[in-house]
Length: 454
Ligand code: C2E
Ligand code: CA
Ligand code: CA
Image 1 (cartoon, rainbow, N blue to C red):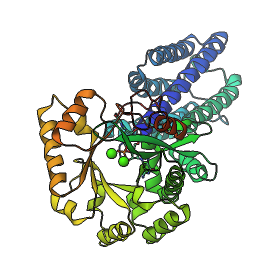
Image 2: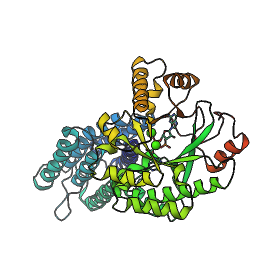
Image 3: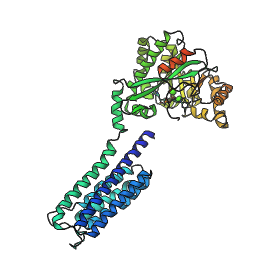
Image 4: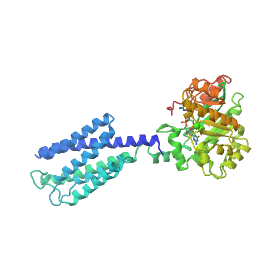
């Protein structure tokens, strides 16, 4: 599944790895240059100076944001420098060859850096470094002229330094690849603790009628992570779904939403409000889903006729033979179902009429094109007339401009949700919006969350 968070984190990791590699090249290259000049080995010293200069050029590329170019150059030129250094690594008997060890971090680094690339970069290059490692370790591929080699008395020190530097290079590769702050495993671990830690909270986005009066809200989950700050739902809900964590999280959302509805019920200004919650497929398919919902509703004391559950269109294709029966069981106690993101999945019109939906939500991708985009307009009109035919309420999502709103009103849409009427906001702001002007149209000045537009 394409996830921008992983891509961002992956780029960050490759960047950190390349930066550390550049610093290591500069450090070791310049130290060896000085040491070899003092040992009167100008050829070897020159080679190390070239390595340090290459490290510096990598740093410049990184500072200019040319990460891709820096990594491509590194995986082609550094192994050549290692191979050249191996030719000079012909230590006296009893001292191991150590320069060859640099091929190992090269292979690991190349494999990690190009995990999403073609075969050549991901497999062929790292494999060729391993072949070079074996060849230079076992075959007599070295210059034998003592005047060009490190003096025998300095060879043990060189072996130590090279072994340790190769080890440091390996650490520089594995640490960024596995200890990054947006790492999936640590996110998953944190997710498990988030409910107990009280890190979840709900935001409320107003849903308004044609006159702009607030009818209710959609509850949207937010995760306030102690270190990462606000983690948007797009980043953790797919993970929660994959790991099954969505079940306890969805349970928490439902409890919080029902508690809020019950609270609104005690105030005349908010008693009429409805609240929609999003339900994930894994949550819906839990064997005890219907019973659990009934229990939560009952214990909360809310009026279930003010609770709506949103299922996405893609769920209609989920293999759930008793899906209709489950939905109906909850309809029977007064709960209403909405079909979310209509137009983004592949459900047939027939499947729409098979399930007891009360609302359809037009996906924001169609609303975005209004009023100029002719095909969006036709699709929106068709969906609204379909909703009319099936006696369903139509809700438009992602309404951002007056023109879109007018166009949707003309097309016959009944309920509207979007930044034009209010961004998702915390409960204090939402209550203030309602109580300050209960009958006045909701304005766009709400100060809700500033999540980037999607
Ligand atoms: P969704 O159910 O389609 O929710 C609507 C999303 O559109 C929200 O994103 C909302 O902030 C955003 N939005 C609303 N109006 C506008 C607008 O005018 N313009 C634009 N560009 N965007 C608008 P959000 O809050 O980031 O939620 C993303 C998704 O995460 C939701 O999409 C829903 O699928 C999922 N999600 C959120 N809360 C829950 C939850 O409690 N349970 C489950 N299972 N999923 C949730
Ligand atoms: Ca929704
Ligand atoms: Ca939606």
